[in-house]
Length: 161
Image (cartoon, rainbow, N blue to C red; front, side, top):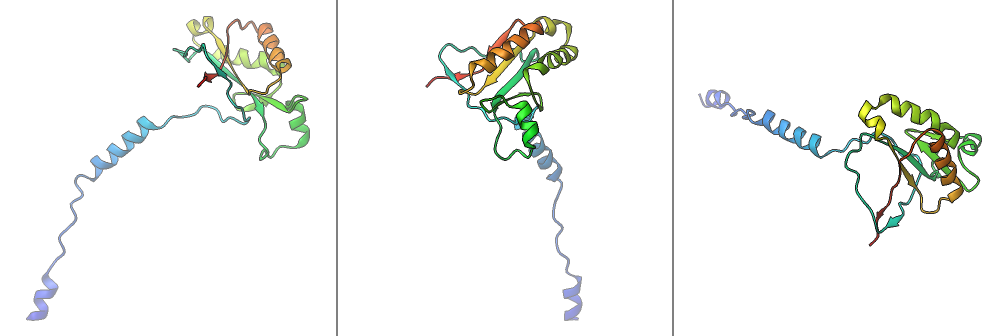
């Protein structure tokens, strides 16, 4: 009789009715907080500092060009790095690929195709160059942008402290 009472006892079940609410709340939190990056930056650059800066309002008409040094951990061959790097060791990145100033015209044409008609008129190129980038490379990029009929160029910087 004593053994029968022990075997008839049951464990109370765990109440999981609020578990889906908790999971969806955490999921919603991470969806709001997480920032999705469109391109993977392959060049290292230090942003220059400035005093008279303005913030962009509408970024849908902005295309980005990154200029910086390749990190040492890049697993590319020396010949492909030499093709994309200038004589001073700086490379240019358009979207997710390393490029040269000659590739800018094709990049701008592809960016214009993805834009809406009103964004095409407001097209702006943001140049994110390293502090030590020689002006000869920046001038080559500006000349290629001029040939691609880009009239608005923004130099990215951070506020001087």
